[in-house]
Length: 407
Image 1: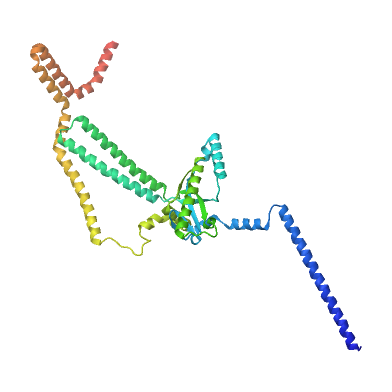
Image 2: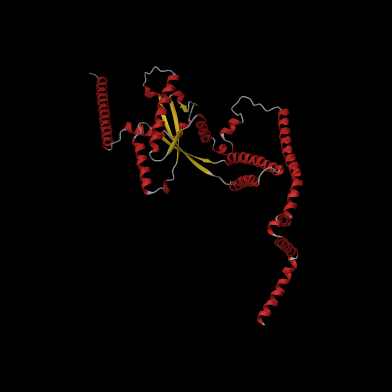
């Protein structure tokens, strides 16, 4: 055997030894890695958390309340998500003033809430939305009501003046109508004061309100992987299931004095609109956008002649009302003057009537008695006519009488 063959054998042996060593090291590393992994899993199991549990918890944490904002459409009082694979129904809750309750009432509310939590058999989410209250809509409603009160006031005024002019109504009827006119006038002035004060108070101030919602989801996968329902059937099933769950939530919340109602499609759109457009919602609400026709493909305006005609009709109505009131006042002026004159001569007319009654009954009273009574009436009349001079002389006579008594 030559030297080259010996060298080849030595290299082969060295190579084999190196391969065996590498394999042994790899097996040892794999053994220790599996052992450490098993030990780590045992520690996690002893702590009560597994990798699957952590994975579920991590996925649950990612399910934020804002997930229900991601929607495909709103229909049948439900929010449709994930291409029809998830449906949501929302229950709006009316809050209670817990701090003002007595201890017994607080305990009742807490027990009712515990019952609500214990009866839940499906996941729910709590959503609180803070809104800026726009008082413009409320003020517009108040203005319309005040205008109606003003119109009723004008009608009652005209009816009262008509009765007063006719002279056929009794004093009791006139007093009753005058009372109604006064009451309506006070109501009209009070309404205008409320509008003015509300506008002044809300100037440059934000009025905030909180709304509380319970989000109830339904997953189509709950029907099973092999269901043969079409989209319409799935939507009906989801609606029935969500409606049942929502009614159950409302009933159990009633046990802790919290009222609730299911939001319809329009209210759901408003909820999502405010969530997506907080700044815009403060000045332009979704119902105003709908009334403005922003959801239409094109807009139409009234004909200019129709608008002009309506404005002319309003002007005619306003001027006709003013002219009617003016003429009614002018028509009642002569009788009003007669009434004022008679009221001014009331005492004189009473004396004349008294003298006439005495004269008519002189035969029964006796001539002397009748003359004495008539003379006394005349003396009273003279005293009243000279009453100013008597008033001026009284202090002097009083002083003379006092001095006489002193003497």
